[in-house]
Image (cartoon, rainbow, N blue to C red; front, side):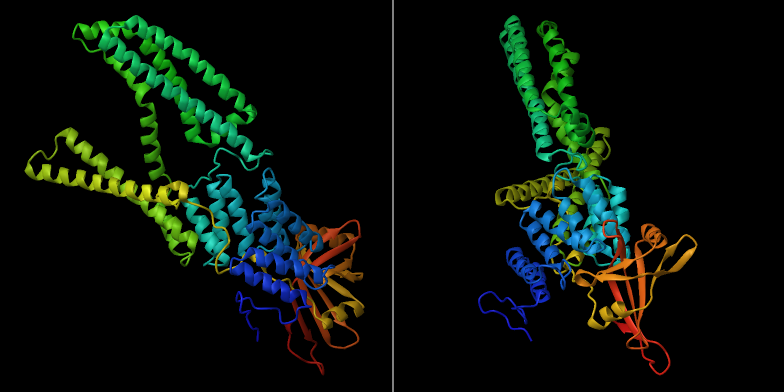
Length: 554
């Protein structure tokens, strides 16, 4: 039984020379969210198994996951690529590479390709489907993401990543970089700079126009300085041109701007409202003398008031519209059910807290509309009606105050607030390690001997007309971690391309009656001219007769 170190509670390897023991220790550290210690243990595993004869890339996969949690994406990808090189048919290696690639700008398509391979190699496993869902969710493909998460939950109902992801898909969650398509071959920091330039231009222009119009209105209506007010407003237009030119120089990716506006609706609204405010400003300045003269005559110019309101209140209107749209987007009640089913996961609890505020926001907005409509139509003007209306207004005010206090506290403490921006994807941390951190399937000495001495090896695979058994020339070699390298004909290669999930059967002529079946994934290696079969499940047994025995796991 293992003992724990008195310093940090770490269980030391039972056999320090065994790389698998170091890999198990690295996995334990990752489960305890200690990526630095996990990386050190994974490095020791790789050092003790340079050819990956025993761990079959397990150490590289664990090192990649540790690098990823430390924010070292390039090193995470390099370690995962080495794991794939050692075991190209391993779904865990493909899954690890896909997960590492999604954090590298411009490599989303490669990540999706690796996730698709992992799904193809191990459709019965939940984690490849979760990664496929995560990649779709990052791109805003909510329906596709939901389908992938549901496939994962059919395989493991309590998968926390699938539950959280499905809840986010139901909420129609958008990533913090929703303006950026992860499939674009460009660094999101570059599109982020372009977005900030567009937002700065829109914000600065609208604020400048509002301040100038207020100043002009005070001068014209209050002091009668209509001509000077017009001159000042004209000069402001020159400042608008200067702001436009300065911010335009910061946008270096103009070819991506249409796509950014199509993906980020609120960026598009902000940019679109600005020329509308500018047109209203020009019209208000042009009709300012008429409005002043009509005001002096005691007549109210409603058209000028509409133009001025457009210039002054467009920001408030967009803010209110956004708050209502954020509250009413998605299906928060269904999302809450998914978060509750995640089993107390940390990310799920955070998402559930935000979703409750979204539900409360819906109720608040609905009550506000009902109260305003009742007051406008004069419904319930008796004493009981007035009391009900004031109770509704009080409830609305109390909720708004509580929301403001909660928001202010979150802002002050730097903690997640009661808004959609606090929603995050599941990061894989928690009591359950990701599937790509699991150990490989090895071959025992008896199994290796059976394949080495077998006179005939049979490959079972899927064909267009149903299952098919093909005779294989021989097992050319047994590679790292028990990988079978088969010398096979064209029909076997074609079958593996159609469906890489195969079974390899052999009998040991030395120990008569002993047979072995290895189920795994076959990937062709054109350079070596062999089919490389990565084991996923091993069964051994004895033929009936005097060697009768039961089948057992290898």
